[in-house]
Length: 505
Image 1 (tube, one colour):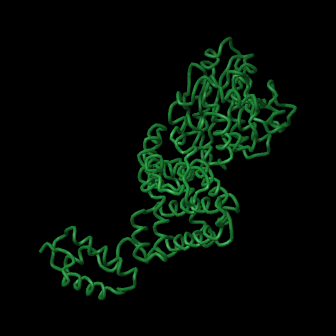
Image 2: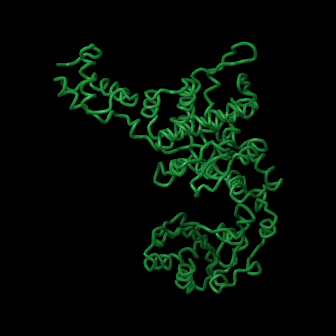
Image 3: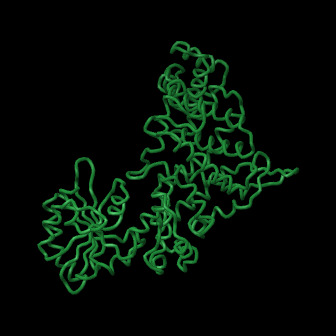
């Protein structure tokens, strides 16, 4: 990084300019954290920012050419650029803000939070003089860093960009900082709602919050501001909804506890060590690293499944508002609420401009979250039932099992029924083991005969009944009724003799 910044400094500084490192990279270095991408401020000797930007552009293009990078113009009028430079297997992103001489303090004051309104002369960093004494701090950001506080730079910070309200909670979750009371009050009473921002920008911020340990921050967001229901008004129907039965919490408190249950499971152990468990016997095993791979796997080019899974934890019961019926004795039923929730989360995904793949995964998790419990109630589940569950759900099997585990565990633990929670966890662990370690046994197809072979055996053309034969044969295989190809052929001929499917000879 230092070599790259030295090259940038060498190219641009000939303009009688001063370069500063600002923003998150500087903040994280001061906190002793590993910093990410770099924000650079280029103060050029000029009367206005637009003139400064035009003076700087040729040198930025020279930097792009020399570093084999890419220059993206974010806002030419304001002098905002992004330089993307290859660095081995990864790419380094430098956001560059070009300003006129003497505008440094004004520029810092217009930023979001004081801990991001710090500047370090690039020359000091390149000379190895990385100390607080060299940091330019017009708004008290260093004091807030030491105190662990998120504080706005000014009273109009949130009004200028309502998305900063979400960013405050993201920083609080990432840095484990507290949001300063006046800042929290400004967020709560902001005149402009985040709903006025582009849906994809809102989802980007929420997605990054969900990628962190989010439950406590979302609780605070919901308790102290209007942000959560501004983004996801669907949660309002869950608040105060009495459920009865196994549930001692209302539907919204239960949903938050499901997220807390999962995050306790996810963060309680060293994930890289390949072990996930919140209690003995809950999830550890040789397949735990595969669970991690599933949740951290990319479902789009740059986005993983984890934030979608956590959103499903919060919204898995959103369909209960449409299916609630009183069953007497203080109990309610919610038959089909998992299916009723699917169009709700699809509409929300469209509103937040999620990708098509993100929407499909979210809908699959919400719509299928009761399937593992249905499987559990047929105790013990037959191999045929397990095979059909695997086939019906596909690659989201681990997600549904984990979501159901968090769902049932949070309900039973809240009611003081720890034995029931443990028994269900043992069941989930067993199904996960079957999915990851015995997939060949529960494969969607029988593996002994294919469709062409069935047609040849029976002298028929490809037709829908052939698929039914293969399904029945697959069930027979997982139940141990057929083990060899010869036994499979005999089984199929027996089906034909019994007339259990109509052939198309």
